[in-house]
Length: 389
Image (cartoon, rainbow, N blue to C red; front, top):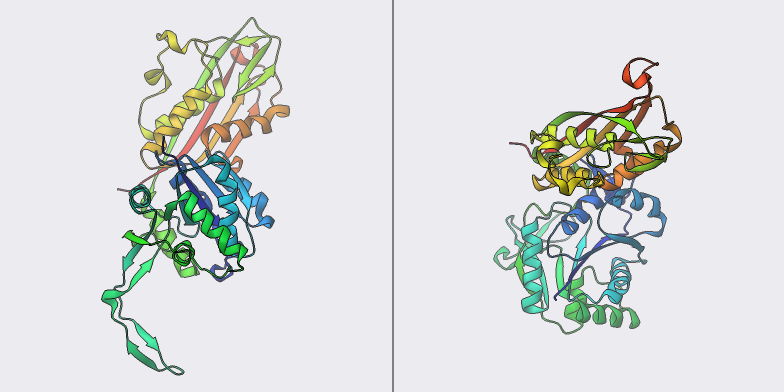
């Protein structure tokens, strides 16, 4: 079966963009540029593996950017873009993909349709690059501030990424270029052409622009605000009673206790409340609508499946989860020692960074059924960003 892999090159320093961070780690609409680019590939149904190539100094930044994504661990790049691509190709070689897409992280707005065109082009030709026509008049530079001749823009094209290739062919070309000391190519099509491959073109996208300056980031923020300008907030609540047992599951984490929570599934009140909060933000009912307790297949089910379902409902509508917050109310067990583990687990299931997960715990000061230690309750809030209308 044909396999497709993607390399996202993110090892540069991005000094012209400002912002105090390499541009691939700056945020647009609350999401890092690198994560946006990787998400485009990880969510595409034809892409088997997505691999980021980073600077060795950016390990922590990259770990945070890719947290929760279904991507391969980032690998360190080289002293040039070309050598960074080679590092990514070497890392993917044991997986033997048939097609490789090579993309610059600084182009975070690529569409699923563009990725599909890149795959089709590589399958048909073995080496291809997306291009867009030049709409402005182009002059050749003269001496000083003067202008020289006018270029024939009908013959000019702007080349973008992802560029797509037969994996074995472009890997061999990159290895040969490195062995011969040719490390000055600015893109992979240049490496391929030097190695004797014929480069075909396919339609790029004007929205697939490269982030280079602060003006580019301002434009990107405006696009993100328009695309995800519908901010929704949902609330969720759940409660389960205690019964016989030796542990409770809260936020996907097993916590030793002298009793267990009873319920049709694993009775994880924290995740159940979060599911209802997300579904509420989407106006798509509640957990019982999608996973009715009358259905035997959910008996004893792990609640991470329910949360993953709600998260996927957001993704299917082109949205993002901006923040999740849950408050657990109980007299016992003590939640504090497990708070970080719960945050981490929720972030993993929701495919968001831990900084976007809040977990709090309190008691009911001895009042009511919670005060009598008859059960545990949880309140949750989900903030979701959906494409604007």
